[in-house]
Image (cartoon, rainbow over all chains, first blue to last red):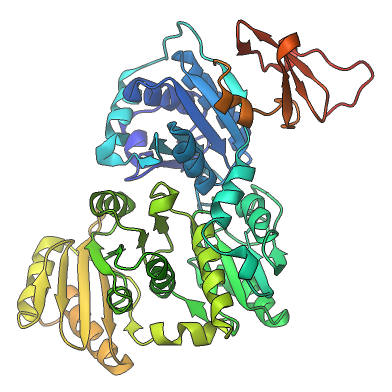
Length: 453
Length: 61
């Protein structure tokens, strides 16, 4: 059990995720809990869990592992990941969230943070925790810590509502699909405080995910939401993932709102509150993000892809907000943690102020054409990137993350996967024709058509 | 866990996660919904269902 090969598989860049019990079982969770105590040297830990069928049993094991090392546990019980981050930030305690996010029901996992909701990733602790798990057979029990149940949902709701002006909000109709995930706990608690008629799809917390997978990035999983938005003449639709940290919006015509477009909208709202502030975006966000930030008098800051980079750069620059095309939204005043719920509430505030349909509000942000992420298996990612650099030698190039090349009417980024021999291509252009032509050009190089591979 | 004010504000009953009151003079924590009473020993709340005094014939979870 817990041989190096299994640990290699389940310790990811930012969390632990594996199939229960084949890869992740009570014994391993207990040891991971004990290892987090040993690594951090701290004495009180928040824990929360999602509604997966394996979560209650694993939560007991997690608390057991933590208390076995003499540390205390404050147990949030059922929680969303953003609620755990809020608890960690507001109480200044480290935390562990037991969740496999949007993964299928047979999975579970753990997300870690240090006091103040500081991220713990591969290079900022997770690798060391893994080493402790691998080295230790069993946790040593001396003076055992205590466990107590705590509740922070009410405080979190107040905190989220603080990001908008509830008193001036106009009545609106909202459809939310929480996909039987943890959004069922936090989303209605917040939305019910707004002058909003809520149609809630799949609100029950059900770890079997009986309706559709809790992964809204897959368009298939947004079909019910889109149908309900049209059926109820709703102003907006909200889709949350399994642990409710990510959100995707659809407009009143059931049109997709990309992560970049929502980042631009939220950035505008935040900059109107704090003129001149910095906004962080990763380098695969649309041009519309830095453009909007500049138009609103703010300072755009570009980062590598990956949530630890966003949080780190936000800390270094004091940025008010950070957005990722993947649907993660980070707020300085939320301990720099991400919260889809806060992004949704800010967007509702913007929609209310505009007194126009969401599609009209977003029209100025929908001016570019994006390829989406195109993954291609290649033998030698490094060599392929150099071939692309040579092919696009007349563009403006930078190497912040893989290779980015910008022209006046299009740009692209190619970056290698950390774990597989894959190249990830993102391209964007001012017209659909240019996008098609240039995407084909770069893909031709990647696939070795007319070049050596 | 020491009985600091911060913890007391967020503590809930382990039986039904109900809100609790701290009766300082009796050194006891009482759940508002299920009525379970948890002892506080040397300033430490013992929030264990096994250690709780249950209301006789009272409501259960």
